[in-house]
Length: 248
Image (cartoon, rainbow, N blue to C red):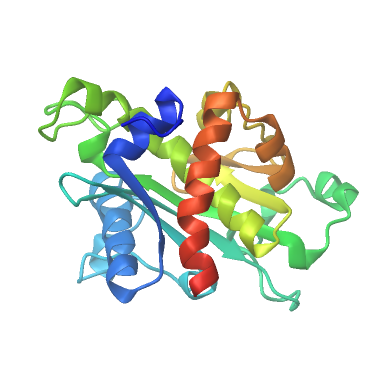
């Protein structure tokens, strides 16, 4: 397999497909990953609310959804969504509705944002089978998995969360969203900083699906500052998603 791609991009795309989830079947796969992670594993949401074992909420209808699928098994390995704003100022993003008391309002006001250009990264989830060895306790992001595959394949699993963030950057670029927020556990911005993805903290830490704080970045800064190997992966993911986005 030699099409000019670097090692990181080549290895990841050998094992995974990054898709814009548009069909009911693909969205169901997204919701089922979220259920396994948010309800079954970490119990951030009550599983009793979702008898069909598919976690969803009121923001899904105004979101762009990404599904990361493991090619050889067909399993949904991870997902993420980008929640979009519209011109109605009362139509809040999740962080505005549920985390308003933690927001650094002075910082947000200093940005002088146009609401139409805002979006929120949300519901980033990596299935537990792609995060840990059999018998290990739950961790949010990891490098190994309990499914049966080669060591070389498992080494690509650590890129699932990064690829989800890159997919959101692609969705933000495609949809014209320049200003992006996310409620994240503080370790995640630290984890991805070495990749060139830099988030600014925009609020204090609070309890919201675990300890999280509001973070802010711009789509352009993510694209401009990615390390070369991940910039190449971003471009490949962008091309995969753009085909479905444009055709839709």
